[in-house]
Image 1 (cartoon, rainbow, N blue to C red):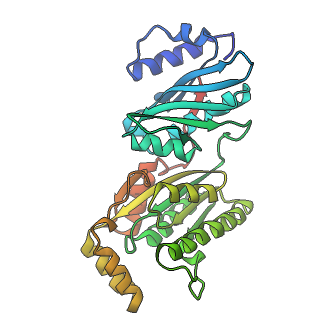
Image 2 (tube, rainbow, N blue to C red):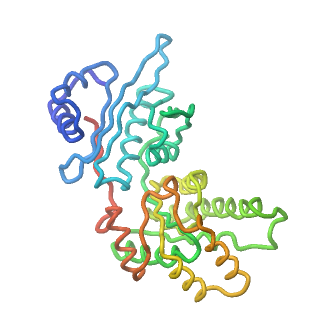
Image 3 (cartoon, one colour):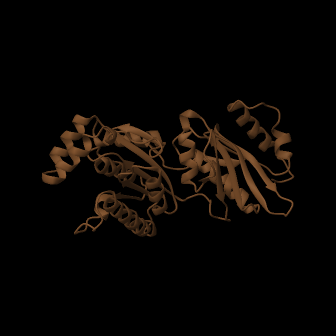
Length: 330
């Protein structure tokens, strides 16, 4: 997006082009073109992701951003790299004066669609490909300064226990970490007059509203990492929790276990009507899997809380330092 093309920029873009199978040799010509914009993500000098597109100016001087390609190496996915690349691209466009951004993706590309919708993209029309539009405002897509890990799964999957273990590990590593069990944020009664799904939505919304307040207090006190235990059953619910965790890059991890293990945990934990309600829900075939649009990845919780927590942090790349991968313009 500038007239000057640095040799280092060309080399970096050429490395990304080679890494992701694009035709080599066109880096300088692309970067020198009007409105060209590219970002490359690296980790320990290894290229792990890239995105590129254009800032398009209309005859009336209004402008928009077009994202043509966003890729992350398979072994580095589910770590927030794609979101960081997208955020950098959107921020650069907003600073250049673009008010909207659009892109297209395959209808069946569930992970990509979940990312775009979590970043505020609205689908334009269904079909073999789906177009997403984003509204851009200066500063709105700047990098978050905090990280959130949300553990989801059915009752008995071990969300609260593993969240506590993750929180302890991060705290021992010197990271100011908050741990929130959302079940504790909606303990009130008598139940609302609405019954069935409508009544459940009242409690779900109360959890999100209270989480926003609690996280605001933790963040003001210095927390930069938050670990949340919550039941999230749809992409819409995920987005609602993301909105509650202001300033955070959110990763959602689904906890799973075999039915007998979950049933045993429930019987050790609950009694009476609560136990019967959870056992009935567990008997429904759709109750155990975590929807792909909800979780970034799943972990089988069949070990000690400490071991499962360590597995999650390793998958996230937070095992040693929950810092950020470098994302810079090409």
